[in-house]
Image: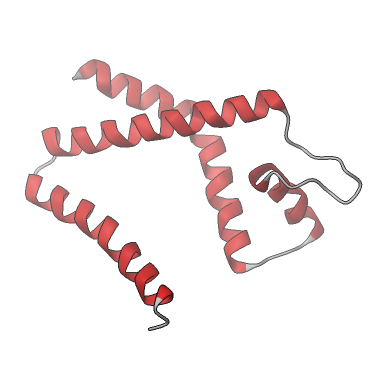
Amino acid sequence: MQKLRSIHLYLGCLFAPLLLFFAISGIWQTFGWNSPFLQKLSSIHTERGWKDGSELGSFPLRVFVIIMAVSFIITTVLGIVMAFRFGRSRRATFYCLTLGAFIPSVLVLFRMFRWM
């Protein structure tokens, strides 16, 4: 299990800056903040080119983002495994995971059926 913790640690540290960037850019896109600077930074996240046809993304960046996404999935699964194996309460871990899936699902259903 020590090896899994090390993999989780190093993958998390390697990709943390890019994950934070995507999370933060998702926030300003969700709120609709559209300054020219934020729009340019968002082009990395959205794969949209600028009006002049240029873009910040590149093939190597796309490969790095794909590797980051796969590593994010792996570290998330490792984190869940470690929560069940080393957490104080497996029941609490189960309830948190269930709520983490249930709450967004209900909110999406509310929106789909216009209840909110």
